[in-house]
Amino acid sequence: ILSKRMLVQTIATTPFQISNIGILFATYQRVNDCLIDLRLFSDNHELLHEERFSAETLTNDDYYSLRLPEEFVYQGKLYLVISSPNASESNCVAIWAAEE
View (tube, rainbow, N blue to C red):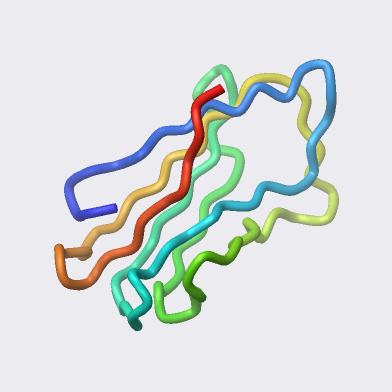
């Protein structure tokens, strides 16, 4: 994830409800201090959740769970937007993703 770029992941939860989302990050086995922005939108583009954290808190090849409120339960299509305002080629993280 580099600055001025974003990753948008569609999460189809129907027919189930979800209460947690985890993202598998890779740090290139180094300490990065760029900021990571996570935004979760509903099907009708309503912002449901957002958070910002430092990549310093990440461990290589480990999951980061969004800090969703305890009462968060959602059924339907979600859009997760992952970006960084200050990442560079030498200070960035990667996202592990698979197509189904």
